[in-house]
Image (cartoon, rainbow, N blue to C red; front, side):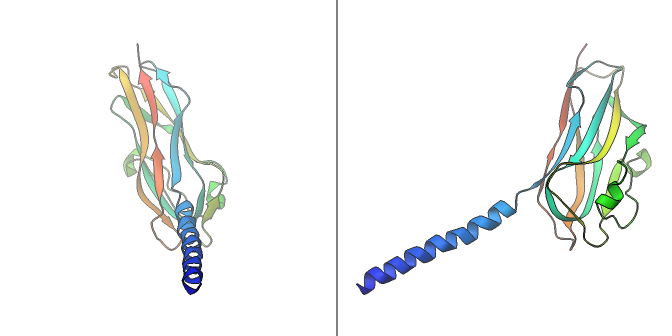
Length: 170
C-alpha cells in the first residue's frame, strides 16, 4: 500500500512538472518580422512596393534592422514612409531612425518607459524599389537584417525574419 501511494504521488508530480516545462516553451514563440511585396512577378524598369511589419510581441524595447536589397534593385529613398503615430505606439524615447543610404538603410527605435506590446501585425515601414533596367532575370529577395531585437531590459528576444521574393522576368 505504501509503495502504491508513493508511486501515485510520483506520477502526479511528474505530470504536474511537465506542465511547468510546457508553458515557457509556448511563451517563447519568436516574433515575426515580415517583408511583403505588392507583386510577385516584375519586369526590369518596374517598381515594387514593400511593407515591413512586426508580429505579436511582448515588451519590445529595442529594434534595429537594415533593409537588404539584392543587386539589380534600387531603393527609392523618397518613397520611405514610417506610419504616422508609430513613435507614440512604440513608446519611443526619441525619433525613429528612418532608413537612408547614408546610414546603410537602417531603421532604429528604442523604448522610453513601457516599451511596446502588440498582438496584431504592426506596419513599421513602407518603401519602393525600382527593378534596374539591366537587372538579371530570376528570383530576387528583399529582407531585413536585424542588428538588435530586445525587451525593455535589453535581453534578446526570439524572432524570425520572413523575406519577400519577387521574380524578375521579361
